[in-house]
Image 1 (cartoon, one colour):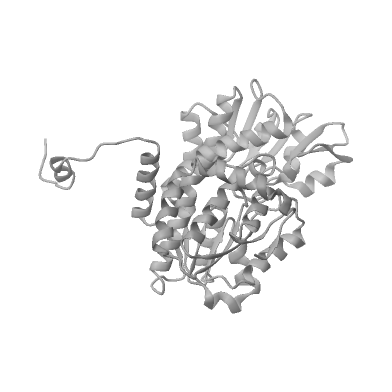
Image 2 (cartoon, helix red, strand yellow):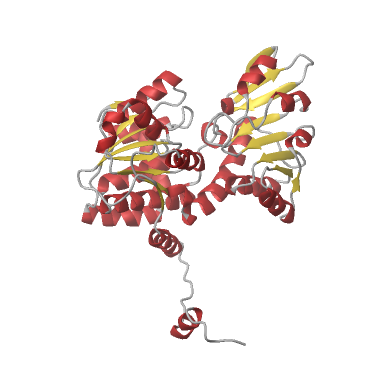
Amino acid sequence: MDCDVKDLGLAEKGRARIEWADQEMRVLAQIRGRFEKEKPLAGIRIGACLHVTTETANLLRTLVAGGAVVAVCASNPLSTQDDAAAALCEDDIADVYAIKGEDNETYYGHINAVLDTRPQITMDDGMDLVATLHKERRDQLSDLIGGTEETTTGVIRLRAMQTGGVLAYPIVAVNDADTKHLFDNRFGTGQSTIDGIVRATNRLLAGRTLVVCGYGQCGRGVASRARGMGARVIVTEVDALRALEAVMEGFEAMPIREACRIGDVFVTVTGDTSILRREHFDAMKDGAVLANSGHFDVEIDKSALAEMATDVRRIREFVDEYKLPDGRRLNLLAEGRLVNLAAAEGHPAAVMDMSFANQALAVEWIVQQRGKLEPKVYGVPAEIDREVAGLKLAAMGIDIDELTEEQAAYLSSWEHGT
């Protein structure tokens, strides 16, 4: 395999951790077993830009079991698990281009290395592969059968491309599957974000005020888990319905301009830019902690923070302390990048099991629909969502009821009344 990883000597450690994750990814294992027999992806070249983790390794193993040829790069400079990357390369699973802490030039060099394999299907986590193809490598667009997108941020960008009439090939919004965003985004992001903050800072959350910026599924998860740790949770939102829901679920809701004066820990999970800005930094307490769990490092205005600071020092591995002229110190975690992957290990394998099951089945569906799809954003077919949910329940040893013939008939009729 062609690889650019930190250290192949880490492969043995990576194999053990990949196996550990696989024990919690029973749905994906069932799909992998079927793929090994049926080879639905035989000869298909897949280019993936994903967080290169132990869970992702099991997804790539599944695609390869189905007959695909895979090249993968990191979708974030700080999210790679170097041992997992080494194991993927050493075991000839995929071409791997991913090093934790890689600079911007290396990051985009790795994206282009994946695209050099001339993929027929792209798998994106943030849409950087798709964007690079459309901006710089348009000659390859005719090779594409389709693609998948894992994140809310990426789906937002893709829909903007579709609206603008520039999307050149079909993409399945895996993020929008119920078995993805209702579980991965909420339970995965919730637990892993709190894990990242605690690992980076070793600070007690109980009794502190934690501000969650954004109350989508990710924000819901962070707010719920922070409350479970004993924090006072404040939610900031621009959507009235989401803010109302937060209040009805027992959280406080207020504008950021008010929350910034009282928060001890801030978490951005909006998918938008400049959520925490200069005017907010001006009002924050000494010692405030700033963390981002949105895909890109644009939610906290790092440039403004750097301009305001008289001194910056790395006080802990994933904590940069910005000292302001009045002596206040603001602590930025993981350089404003995904704190759950940069400072911790990302989502637990049990929840990524469903997300990556959707990825594998969506790729199979794209191959089955080859030549029939328009260049637009598609939802995950409902039958795939149901299949993943059913497989997950079965893996957990849980049975549920089925409608009787009488009940099914009643629900499909209109004649019955009072």
